[in-house]
Image (cartoon, rainbow, N blue to C red):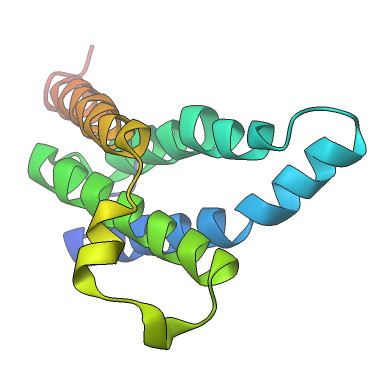
Length: 132
């Protein structure tokens, strides 16, 4: 199995968070088109796609610390991309409003991504260290 260097893993986490954040509004619009609540796109991102990304990348880099740093990076850039799509007037942004606008569910999700990534990294590292 190929090993992903930490800097490339963090770049992949960052790009994944940005892409999912920018795709959030189109996913919500697709959900509304099918008669479902608009929050389904966000729920899909936060509850399915971001955990899968965290687990998938952790399997390839196999480091618990990078899994946590990647989870935080992915979550912050997901939030930044969503904010850019929703509020394009960047001149109105302040550090306080940016931090306060992070939803608590996203913070809990970030912790979950870190835990899932750590479990995936540790299990993968042990399996590779002890082949059967």
